[in-house]
Length: 405
Ligand SMILES: [Zn+2]
Image 1 (spheres, rainbow, N blue to C red):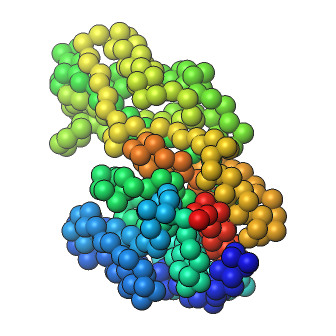
Image 2: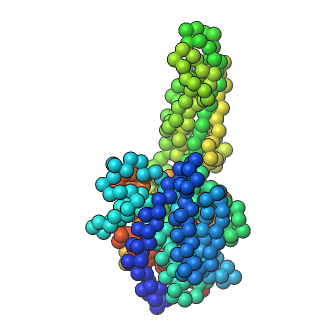
Image 3: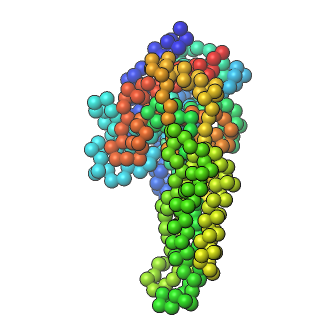
């Protein structure tokens, strides 16, 4: 049988070893330090895929920051399916707070510990091994399978934005995002807009406040509008079983925007960031309108100020894919074939590279990968080996179903 022949080529030790090797190559991106990028781990992915005989493309997204894409199969035979992962990881924070050194990839009682184990070097390793098993088996594919190891997911998502602008990117017809979602099939992802609000007032002496216009008081008025923005967004966004309702959360506050804060000076301006999380439904204009309304209201209440806002990093809207999509059907069947259990559905609390793929290319995406959904970015991050093996099997079965000759 085609599927069993391929599954038998997944070597559990190889999945574990590859995951640990990737974790041991730190890839925290530290701006200002040219040595601290994804370069070393990307090079490891490239070497490994080339040794397996894949066609490998390296895209230089920024200095020392390459996307690596490996392919098997042929576009003439059918669609192109991407198994997507990112090579960057977030900071380990204080190493002393970890019970296992963050980049040692300790294997204890069926768990691998370390920064990036769940988010998402295990998912990437599972995708690589799944594709390699398919390639080694020599089964014919009705299309092309791509493994993408992209940069900067934890930053500005430069890697996936770059990919979408290339001819190779535009050939992708569907994608599985291998992020840690405890192997649930996530057809929905929350969206995010970081609204940076700037209030302009007039600088003055703190002892003579009437001589100026205080932007901080106006910013406080605007921040009191946050619950109202949240209420209105909840009214225009769709409810979802798998996603938390929209939230509007102030995360950054700063005054003056530039220069030195002084206790006896009313600054000329003040700034705050609202972290706005969305569920599917409204388009960018509808979301922007709700923030505009709050800014105008605060301006009316604070004469003499002007308030404007900008989305940092654009609008990353919530995504949803229909259960009837061929990719979803291929995965529902794939989960049962690979694990013997029915597929479980879930939702992604934040945005991922998949958000960009969905928005830019309009293609169906499903997020599914090993690792507890809540563990990323924490101290003592870990992944269960059994989940990583299941993921590799799910990717094989799903790819073979989707790329049936
Ligand atoms: Zn991630």
